[in-house]
Length: 517
Image 1 (cartoon, rainbow, N blue to C red):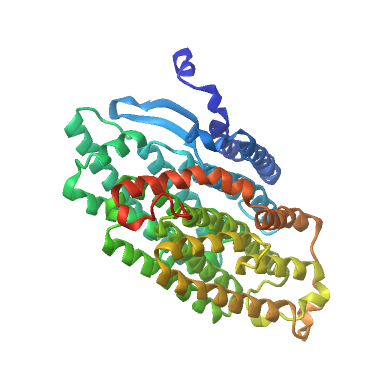
Image 2 (cartoon, rainbow, N blue to C red; image 1 turned 180 degrees about the vertical axis):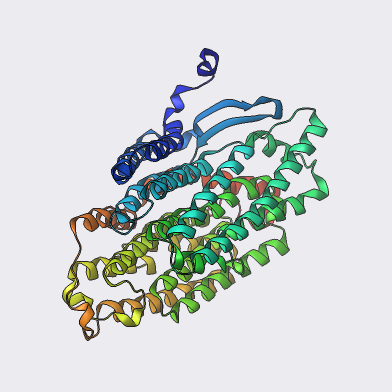
């Protein structure tokens, strides 16, 4: 035991706490009576949120990867429990930690059965999400990737809507198919390195160094393809998106929030952390770049147009995620500092705004037990506070200046115009389509006539619901009006990715003296 403790770098206790605390909380929930489940889950997630928020002050962007800790796990196979954060991951960790107590509060009245299982699964899901963002060993990363899949499957399949089993199985099969391809690619890289160097290692740094030598040769396109498909399914990139609307519509509110706000970001984070650094030449080969940019632009326009005709407000928001994640892909493959920073901000802004929309839809569903847009109208007269918050969150999702959505999309478009002007021009139309589908939906839900008797006695926001929404409103306005601190913390990581790709593929990155670099 003493030897084990001696291997732990206690300067990295924060990452241990973020990963391990939810698991401890889940075990406590399962071991205690069901009446304690809600309160214990809220307490654990509030502590988790405080630790996550503390990363804002602890993190120093000039140091690169930090809070690093490595513990031998399976030494015979070169597996170490290695964790760390940098500018790519720190805000995604914070987003995951800060959203979870809001999700617990959103479930307070809506979940009435199997309470211990539900809240324990939420906490296990939190461990998986944060683990994905901090893992620096590819075996550990894969374990957390799969850990995240299991609780989400049960959250949808047990507490979801009428077609929950179909949606859960579809989500599981899609994600599992992609992750198995990624596992094969990881094992091939590790085996190849072991054969060449005589040692086995899953460490991210070791595999990154080995891949840079060019020793993988003709295997590289296939290995990149495996990583690309695994992450494309998770994003999801068009046409791998078909699991997403079903999962969103059938999932309980908290699962929808986490699916949109965090799980989709695992795919784009995977590109920035693994696929592009390991295989920059393959990622930015002329054909690959053209295909990815085309799929990104198609996703932006297609997602917005399909959202425009949805009668179910939850499915409308689900298709809007396809459109927003298209902007993230465009920003990444533009490969400028502004483009990558814009992609990170879009990930954060989408997490806040779309999470807020799903929470608001959940509040409405608790009152009316329907998500049909046609079932509402005139809610601003009986629920003025709800209507006000819905308008603000919708404007942020559209990307109105002064809100979080504007900053990220503006940076993506500015950054992509430098290298991909045609794709950026087409993508800009997505902002117009977003205004069309969201403003039309808001008009039909909260404005127009209050002509349905069922809506006339609906209560406005409660104190619990205000407690959920106020942090999201603060995030929308703060990131929209004062994004500088976030941009300063992400810039070195974005610059490092651009420089790495420039060394390998100088044709696709503007020169270092370009204003966007």
